[in-house]
Image (tube, rainbow, N blue to C red):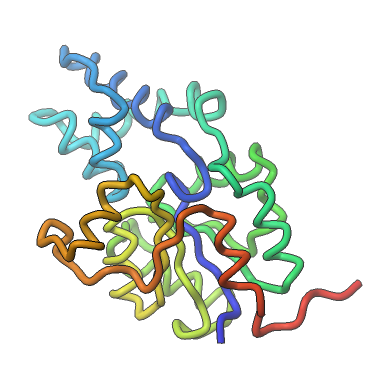
Length: 229
């Protein structure tokens, strides 16, 4: 009985990896470290900013590194973030079908709110959550998803969580929510799940989608009536 859809942000709704890389390299430069490629940074995105700074700017005070990142990020996040393919066409149709939707991202909630608004998505979400809303309990802690379910007034079984990373599977499993990942056919992570590779270290998602627009195919018969008026 799917009534609600919870979305990850980075890599699911928006391609923000260029902006994340720019701010990460800004912090690294502050400490005399060489820049990293976007591909190198992308591997460590998803577990929150503290984890990102601890891993990619090692040996420095983490609070200081986080503060430098947050100071720099507003200068790049708007110009270097764009919607993932299919998002602009799909969200309006899901909203029209009556699904309640929310964003659950490890990004600072202020940044996510600003980006969702700038990208023209604000009207589709009943709530936008970050670690700030759950006592800094970042994913894979399930607190953010559970808070979203509470605000949307649905049970875990009435929702689906849509993401693109291992951390999204870990988070959804902890919250008891079905999880779907959007993974292009060439995705290395998709291959790991397909071959049951030990590298994934967890059960596969409930469903793997090729593209964001596949949501319309699998959610074509909503269990809630479409909005009226």
